[in-house]
Length: 111
Image 1 (cartoon, rainbow, N blue to C red):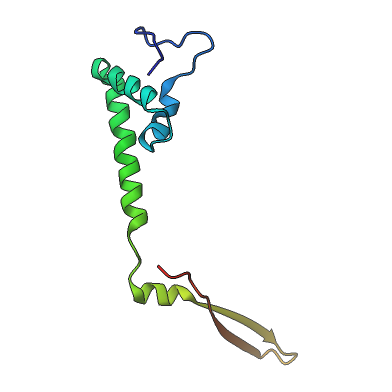
Image 2 (cartoon, rainbow, N blue to C red; image 1 turned 45 degrees about the horizontal axis):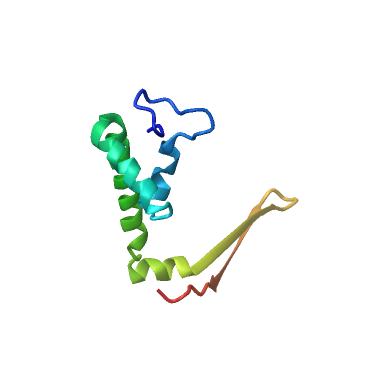
């Protein structure tokens, strides 16, 4: 998506508008610029496809991040377990294995 050039090339000093797709979809660009980008996609199927792909990706990420883990999974994650095992071999060739497990509970911010 090139600014003001129907041949798909940016004029010197102008940037490729593809790099503004995410910002446009997030409402971070001036409305006039977003409108111009959208008008361009009316005539450019390549840019329209790219616009739609970025829009779908952002929607998927937005939906995925909005979901909350089930409470039992959150509980298992909250309890951090640490197991340390040491095997010691005695002079007579016998082995002794010592295992120690400790748990600590992490607090998560309220959802």
